[in-house]
Length: 297
Image (cartoon, rainbow, N blue to C red; front, side):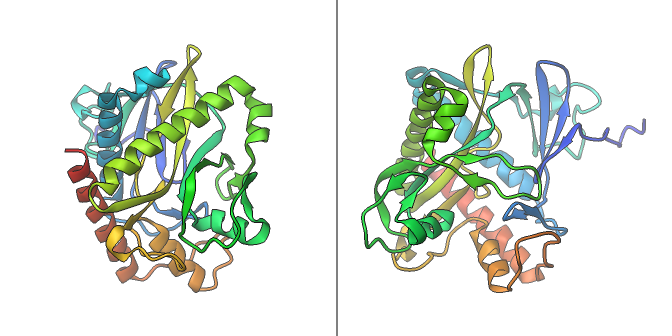
């Protein structure tokens, strides 16, 4: 094989490519692909994968240092993001440097663990229809982007590429995973969200909502995938936050809003994005990375 050629990934997700090293280890490469409404766009966002990898790594480090893992009895999957320590043929490969992480392989839990602190996105749409989100009955008269009385846990099913993840109530998660595991995932997710939201608010950023993914390794819960990135979270600036409309943020909601306004039906193929939309997305991701770095210093 040409030394500059990577083998084909063993699994290609919407944004990440996975290489199965052996039964215990896996390499995750964050590409520059962009997805919205679970559809992948043809156009890459330059250096997006590197930005997401740096942000995830900073949050993994901060959560480890916080003591949350010991308090709630979980761990994370990271082994190293140093490409010099990757096994051949991945070691120091230019396509992997700064955008890849060697991790422990786990048995993935097929629910997205979503935590919402504010009323936005699909949660806002559900609330308008039913007055509730995933079984959480909320006070009447809330406005879009209102802060919720307390953060809520709203799981979603994991959908194949091209299909939409589906919000479900906690009872379904309890039934499928068992009450003990489901309760622990909810407790851990809420604890991480609260920790991150407090750190970001200290720097003038509101963490509207976020999603976590978990796996099991030797019966222990493991935090996996990306965490608290602008791909998996909504970040709002305190200075421009105003309930009653969708606040501008530092995340891919900017792209979602653009393509929704275009009349796209949210099914493949994705529409073409103008160069200025891609450039604005690059800027937003870089800006929130700097605010996260400041919050975690």
